[in-house]
Length: 235
Length: 121
Picture 1 (cartoon, each protein chain N blue to C red):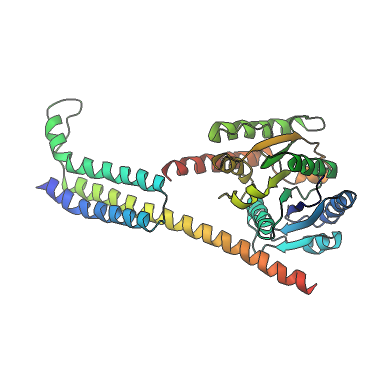
Picture 2 (picture 1 turned 90 degrees about the vertical axis):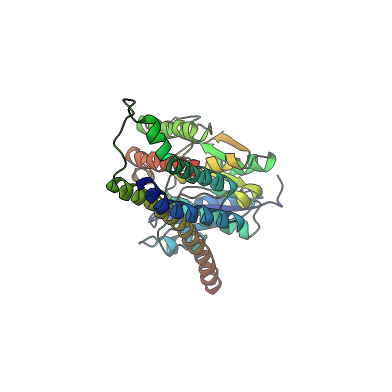
């Protein structure tokens, strides 16, 4: 694998003080064992706890959002940092510890070997360990993403994504909540970016089950996506 | 006479909207797609207003499309609706622009301030 490529690992975090240090340490230890040149950036999205201090203890660079602006806003800030600082690839992953370091490394290696611009780690290719409710919710949102935007992926809501330099330089979205996951795919399609998926495992602990999206939040996501789709007919 | 009042009240609003639209497009503040769609919407409104009297004459005495003649209340209501469309359209564009500016500002500020913080530590 080429060591010339610089990779920025972006972790958007909101009130993740109790787990962020271990998440950062875990990914750092795994990446240190490879030849990947990397930097870990935690975007603290206006947390009210000690997320910043804990992320620094884990060894990450921290970007503090002055205001809480949602997962979409925090991810955009992290990717903007990666673009401004000349990274060749960026990886986004969840701060609740649901992603395995080996899946992150697999994704980076796949992205480096292929010409894919947006590589999505899909939890729904192999659904072992996922609850039926989560599977249903995520599959539903993927179907809605396909119906609204014509992007056919198995897991439109996955937080583990790998971006090429081309995607970093061009990909922008307007929504700031969790709906950005689907909107990002739409923008990538509009920009003719090469989108692909690879299977990953998701680890659901008691802690991670309390974080992220639930099926009720999915209703808000769908409402927001439909609104955005209709508004853009007139733009 | 009432149809002329309707035109006199509404054509200036639509003309201002069209002028704003052309200016924004020429200054590259809006995309070609947005310009075209908005142009079509305002043009439809203008055509409907201009041809409202001939259309009324054509439909008079032909149920179920037959209707009462234009009242003064109709004129006020139609003018208010067109004026509101103009205001809402302008507001939406301003809100979108402000949202984008605030988002970009917040992003840049956070990155710059963090660079300072990380430099100190």
